[in-house]
Amino acid sequence: MAAATSPRQRRRICPQAHQPFVLACHFDVTSGSGGRCARSSSCCCCGGGPGPGEWSLSESRGGTRREWGTGSMEREGGKNAAVVAVVTEPRFTQRYREYLEKQKLLDRQHRVAKMPDGTVALPVLGEALREQHLRELRNCVAPGSTCIVTQLLHPVPSKKAQSCSPAQRLCLEVSRWVEGRGVTWSAELEADLPRSWQRHGNLLLLSEDCFQAKQWKNLEPELWETVASALGVRRVAKRGRVSPDGTRTPAVTLLLGDHGWVEHVDNGIRYKFDVTQCMFSFGNITEKLRVASLPCAREVLVDLYAGIGYFTLPFLVHAGAAFVHACEWNPHAVVALRTNLEINGVADRCQIHFGDNRKLKLSNIADRVNLGLIPSSEEGWPIACQVLKQDAGGILHIHQNVESFPGKNLQPLGSSEMEKEHWPYPQQIITNQGTNGATGDSRRKTLPAATKPEWQRWAESAETRIATLLRQVHGKPWKTQILHIQPVKSYAPHVDHIVLDLECRPCPLVG
Image 1: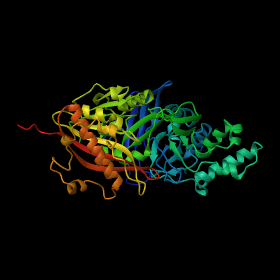
Image 2: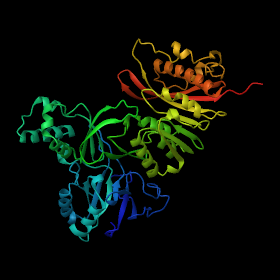
Image 3: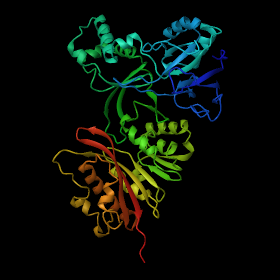
Image 4: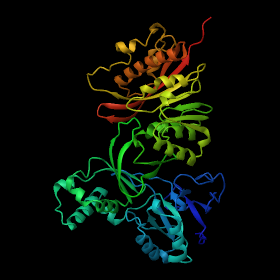
């Protein structure tokens, strides 16, 4: 193990996945600068530099602080993610433990781990750990001690954590606290406790269907401190219904803590956002992974509903898009988007267009357009057609919630009289069923095996509508082809969130 570091310098441990508790690459990190791997730039486990899940510098009101970048999120019943731990020599363990307990930094849900070199790793609440704590441990609590930070990839739950589930532990601690306040514990109160939640680092996000009984009101705000203590967090928020204000502002109330900013990491991409102001759907992870694998090198992309960068960032970071025009009208999401572009190093390849995308002035610029709004992105279809390159066309990724009630016929787009008034040249609408040469059989090969008939009917009606819009916007016929229908998640009973990949190309001029 390395010698103790100075107050302005310490070593960072890059996690390695081959076996538990292995200290892999060592980084020398000094305040205000980054870090490079002591091995080489071709290190197999980190590539030679800091990445997600490691310590990073960020600015706060109190000056430079170090934050853990995992943004870990856990659900009730899920497996524990890696945890942050402070490593020191065995003779200093008790002093470290007492200090960490006093500072409310000790992670009581995991056991202290003995490292292969004989040192000891004490699990801590990573997002609450700051550089000042490390300085105090090194210089005041145990002078001369080795004080480094590592990540335990396979943490062992403590005996206390193993004895009951998080939900059981919550019930036990809340009931004891309630009775200590002179309130009778009842089956009604127990049934009103949460059974599931989201955890964003040290922030717990409760669902709207818990703590609804009137008795809870008289127990606030101390109630939320008890909940936080029981589940090992520092902040608590409660989710409500998404506001129907067009910006999809979440009705989230912060119950404990001074701010709602959290960090989450998906596929190596860091997302920072305020849970009280911005949406973040964990159910879209499969689509974000798919987007990241698309061949977008040298392409210009327009993301009409960028949010905090759910799809903008995968297109830039992993798919290799040359440039993205990101449209968003929620001012809080724009703040988060700008931050996320910066911390992921792609701000120079993205332009943010703040405001209503229906008023977007761009045209004839995009190779690809993402329309990631549900339940429907139909209001954005005309502008999507407008921004496609006139001479080459491109691909639309159209999100939609589609109902699949047994026995219910889907109402195709454009079937009403009002819609038909906007279709002056029906004989010139070209779809992949006709003049583009693609047959019905070839199209079906692109659909997933589990495609429902309702999904295909909606896709075909959307394709027809897009072909009409392209003809109206560009003044000439276009050919369209359904490339793929991707299921994302079940949004509600009999309602599926799907994505249609639609290829749109201008027809060659005849004569």
